[in-house]
Length: 296
Image 1 (tube, rainbow, N blue to C red):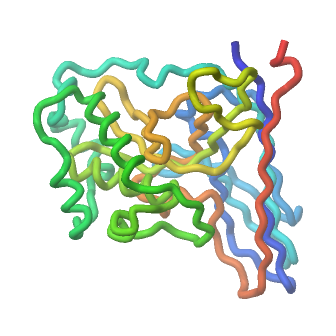
Image 2 (image 1 turned 180 degrees about the vertical axis):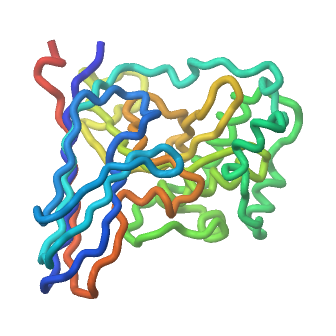
């Protein structure tokens, strides 16, 4: 049974003087490949005097492009959506016979289609050291991915970073810590160096409060939580794009709502655009609630 869940997300930029906002690109609508059904969605933006054009980027993600006609002292983006959270088995897929064991090679035609997702950055000392420790013996592909994802969870400590951007691969691997976007980008690059097509994903992660406390495993969140999150997806023939979250070491199941999946993290920013130089007060408000009808 699906649980109807309401998500409310507000991003505010309050400026110390009137500023001219350049064209703004907003990537806060669940992507077409999102496995969670979203029966209701709204995006509201202030200032109200604007033009908006919904588009799909070169990778099929929804983007809203806003053009503003006058100066403003505040830029506020509000998302409200309803998601049907139902159990998703992340291992519910088939793999083509030639890709059942790793390493494998993509057929020439498929490799051509995946070229932009196979383009790896040059490996530095830290990445070379990590790659040298990845077993290359013949093994089941799915188990290989599970082990690699869990290794990153163990070796890269998750931290909350308020600084914009993504750390370099060498920084994340040498510090052995990073935000979800840092570890997600590291996993993308590791997969590409191993010959696997991978892309960077930004999205919402919804974690619901359990109805009962578990008796034999650690309890999860004691209330519903949502956050902007980042992870990686790898392309496995037959299965398609499979989500891997290196901050948890798990494959992506229910609760993961991708907003943008792109070859590079710079193309997946939730909000991007230019604005006049000014002092700014930035804040984010996020909350999730369960519809009373979902509780029976």
